[in-house]
Structure formats: C-alpha cells, structure tokens
Length: 110
Image 1 (tube, rainbow, N blue to C red):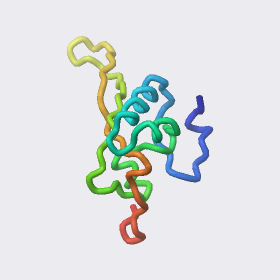
Image 2: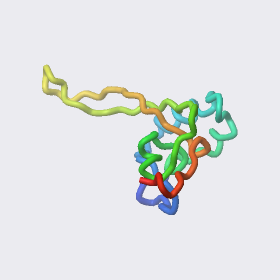
Image 3: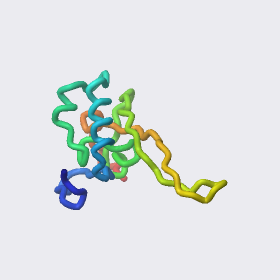
C-alpha cells in the first residue's frame, strides 16, 4: 500500500489516508455506481481518482453538472461531551471521480 507522501504529485492528490477498509468500501460503491461501474473500480487509484467537490475546485477542476457522488465512509475520533472519553463515529463523504470533472477555464480557477 502506498503512503500519501510517496505518491507522485504531478496531478491532483486526494486526502486519502490509506485505510484498506475505506478503499474496499469506495471500490464497492464505484462498482455499483450508475455512471462508473466495474471498469472504473478495477483501475481505481484512491490517491488521484476521487475527491470531494471542494477539493476538486481547489485543484482547478469543476464537477460536471448532474454528476452522482460516490459515498465514502470515514471514521472520525471525537471526545464524548458527557463522558469526556474518545469515541469513533462514522460519517459519509461525497466523492467525485476524475471522469466526472473537467478543468476550469482560466478565469474560474481557484
């Protein structure tokens, strides 16, 4: 498994942290995705192929109108307000595949 720091940065890089469980869940989502499917799942690179809407914009890309998001689970550690103990909660992040974005025109780039 690659580490984020080892990934070539000549193209947009996601914030994927290397979790095998998250990778498996995202690949399963892509396989069932109406716009993507098994072809995209087979060649999926979590470091470069999918990012959030805002991350794509910060990299100078625009998500295509009507694109359907890939649902990705993430686990966040928080402090329980009542007990003060750390606990892990599951959240869902909406990702968009590189095939669902295009480079912004020069006037719109972030």
